[in-house]
Length: 494
Image (cartoon, rainbow, N blue to C red; front, side):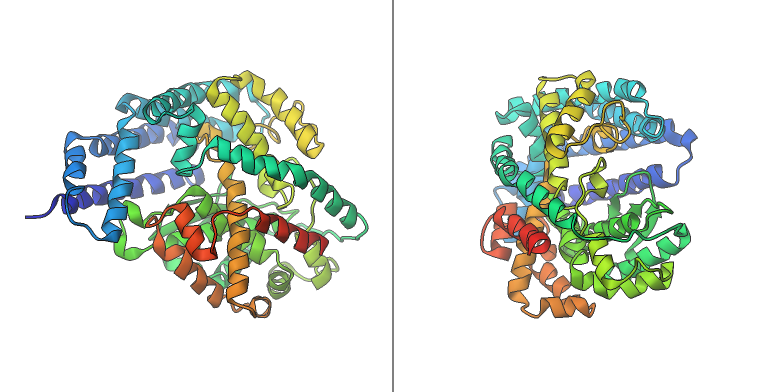
């Protein structure tokens, strides 16, 4: 007779298969699905989310969790049971009706956003967003009451277990004391340097081939994933079938190229999660910030280094053609250019944290009820001017409508981007200590030692350890923002 733990593993294996279907249907919704399919697809995904919720929150699942806690389990099984229990507790707080309503509202808002954003239609978008916010507040209230936290912290914990707004305020508060001055120093320094801008147009087909070529260099497994196009770049799917997307601009190739590299970092993490525990919570990525650390490790720490840029330039020229702007020195200046701008996903790594802090401050106030949806544009403009000196008044599509996260109620997600940047810098420092010849290896495109280090220290562990344990084991200390500051100073002022 199977143990309670074994039966419980079967339940979560089943849930994993439903999540697989949901992930691929969600990917299709954002890449291939004709507009007319939106309503029925949204309903289908909502039905699937309700089914998963019912299985997870059933009395039988709760009984198995209680029984399994009394059994003798090894370290990995204990870690898996902890994640199972956490998932069960989180899900049990929400009624199925709320899960369904939130899924439908999110699908509706996201689909409408695709046409409302290009049209700069804030009023139309706001109506859908209000419904998403209302349901997200309802969810946050239920979670907060059960966990004894603030509403926002209850949602933040879904993405970054153990993180609180108090910790974020301390970390981001420190960042705000030195980042503006550093940003200005870098901008002033780069103002003395001339940069030639590559002249397009760059054929989309050629850009795609370049992206595929770079993905190959970065070790992407094409037998377990693919590259497509979407309105907002993302990494989705499942470890056995990772779907990454980008968007192309015929006048500017670097945005799509770096976007592909960023998503490939996410994908490599997914493709290398522990296969021996597949289908179990312990086999999933540790947290959103750790996931983001992998994409930023690839994009910022690795791909924007002068060594990697020198290595990859011949492939750029091969696919897009030679021109005066594509010299080694100018290519580095292009990809290390610091210039505050409107769009978060196109931001350089120095100004990027300002985009995140702005969103964090707005979404926290929104969930806590301190502001309403109608207050967002003015507040967004106020903070953009204060943090980056940029006016976004009336420019909603390049302001508060530019991101996809709030459309489906992903409140608490944004802070993980800058936490991820900090983790990435700390991890890259540890890799550099472990592999003294790292710059020379990168310059030759010999990246396997880097991937082996990530596999050994991050990828293979899944969710076996807490974020703090994982980072401490990999780098010798918990999150330390000083490595991020040191990285920026070394790259841009050194």
